Image 1 (cartoon, rainbow, N blue to C red):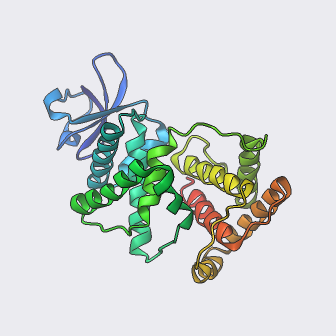
Image 2: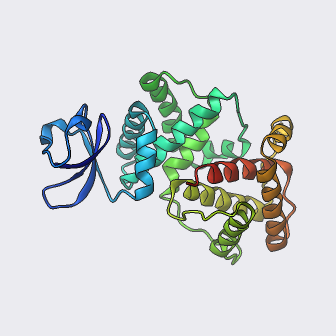
Length: 273
């Protein structure tokens, strides 16, 4: 395995024996210099088909979190007998880092819609709750139990089959929502990034909930008011998207759903480089 460049002490961008680019993980392999060969026994894990946007994520997330995400995805793959793309662990690591940041800032969001996950995806929810224990053991970070719901979404996302949405053109609706954000913030959003993928997933679930008259409802009014003040531009943009969705779906959108839009929009724009 020949080094192209180092990402950090334990991760390197390499070429394998067939000349394919790969991200390699292994203790201390980041100390090998460009063009040096890394002995295969030093490499614990490899990832192929890594996008350019992934390198920034890998570089900025602690190795312990990446290793935790790898361990969890391996466990889930084995228990559910499914195969995830190699980028799945990187996506999960990005989510874990964000969840830890929210915890450190004392931002806790109730997610009552995810209570249905116990009935719809009981095995995935059991694994998600087990994953919380693994995260605590491997990183020392104790995430709130409600995070099990979002972990469950990670485990099922790549296996969800598209459902009929009353003939709605969800792709077009999502693209129009994205253009609203781009126009409001004068930015260009990378449609291939993990952050955008998360935003698209959120919109997909939002559209489903609106179509089925099952909006999120909880006691997050205080957080909603705080986010309005903290992120006024994202709040204004969220209202524009809510108004657009109201026109398309003929459904009023409550404050709770707007709150989640604020969070997703703010995260999306804050990661645009």
